[in-house]
Length: 375
Image 1 (cartoon, rainbow, N blue to C red):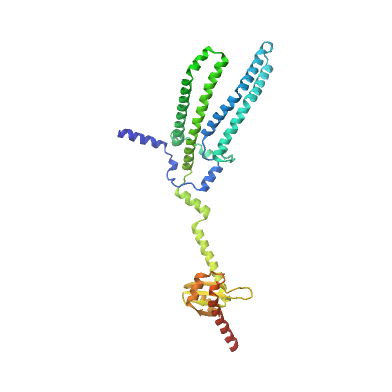
Image 2: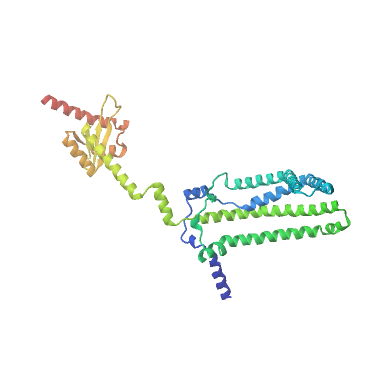
């Protein structure tokens, strides 16, 4: 018993795909989209086969009489003229040409309908996407190593699944044929006592029933096959952790580069902010933890505007620049903290702070008037 289990495990390993090792991550939208552009999609050919068989036999049943009598008339015209026909190359060529034309007239509509059904069945599964990529030769894939022959041809998951599907279809068709023949056996045996037309009708009806039942069961079978093909397709597109990281870098950019860009943007923003400090009317401080520079131009501002703000070291630098450029410093712990938390750079102060800021500006204006009076 132990040997049997070990033997089964060893043989199942032959069907494992070595290239799938390490591919544990679900495919990204980009990977799925690129695969679709290359013609790699999840679809089952069983759906098209079942629909062509089902609808094709219904169409054949509808036009069977016309097809039969049309073919019979064509054969009669040939045999009626055999005794007067010269056996030359030109005559044989004419017969062959007439036969092809007659075949196109009789079977052409059925072939066209079958192609349309197959096309619609594929479009329903994957949508419409025209690509010539699958026809592009890839010589790099040509390899005759024993390892590749083992993993790709003789012992692959696809080979195993296709073998199982083929066996199941044979069993299904054989079972339906046995069931139909068994149920129609008395009528089929009785055809030896009937005329040729009656016998053809009975055999044709049995064949029609076999085809319809087979196509219906294969139609359900195609649903399960589609689910497997979809799963297999997603498995084949799975990615390694490294591939996901590389794709994210390409899509979002290298994190190190983005970090440097953010640092650069912060430096530029800081530089622009510090350039606005000398233009301010006043800098409200905490006095050391926060500093907020305010500018008020009544001609084009509805309220005072925050042109710079910062905490700790940045606050210290704002105060240094303000001192170097003779911008007044006003200590107001509550106002400085509120302005720093509630108002962004470039925004005007909210109405709730109008009175507090107005008091500060009044102090500044009085200080300026005193300086001007002294001068």
